[in-house]
Image 1 (tube, rainbow, N blue to C red):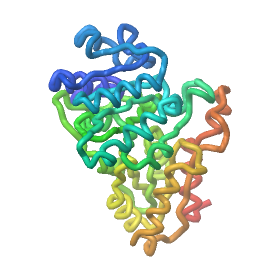
Image 2 (cartoon, rainbow, N blue to C red):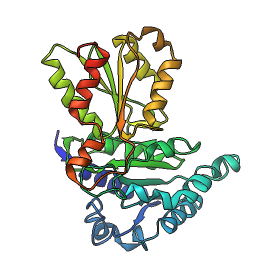
Image 3 (tube, one colour):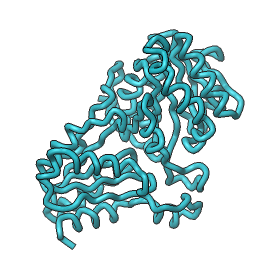
Image 4 (cartoon, one colour):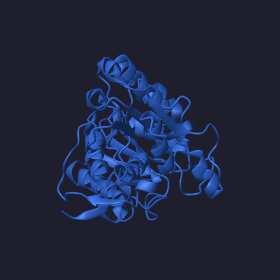
Length: 327
């Protein structure tokens, strides 16, 4: 199987869907000739033209409002926000319109749209361009929230998101864009709401999202040299959440560490921890649930401070050892 980058996988998913379905189009800031802030849409305007690759003004409110309206009339828009931080400007359209219309109209009005946006830190983009705000979106009934960590998952999940008749928030971590993986050239779909076991283990479960999946895998390699077997669970979608896979893993290992980049306070890790505590897995726990998340500070510009603000590989290793009483 060929190996491509995460970025290329996202582009390929959109291109294949646009060839298959004329109702699919993309819109956003500088996505045309420039190819988007991170180059994801590069070359697409040459194939699909300006009608289906639409440059927009720098107004997230206008972009999201246009997408909601287009979706209501039968189109399947994919809107790109240059940075996930600016979903704050699109909140009324996403939270009060897109998320609620299907319910309020008894299913007669559908909003099949995908909001794609780069998220997270690690690029020196500082406080206003480096946040992880996915927990906000998971709080809103009517929105589905996706966080792929690999190229394979990005393509398959984006295909499923485009086909879904509900609004989907599709987070693409900036540091994942250059990562590579085996990705089939043909079309395929990964169901929303199905987690993936990235690594099997017996001593502890690590539930990780987005770039933290890669850090957790690196931590697991180091831990294995010390005789500690870590199982890595990647939820892939936060809404809907595959509770069964997570609970099954925790029942097997008896210990769990939940790690995400977003600020720990109010982060989605608390939801996962709460779900485990309320499930049958609670009786199998041999240690308290451990959560790792970002510190409650704006993301710094300084690269060393930026690293200090979010969990790193050594932090995951330390958390695992603490839950195993190996410190």
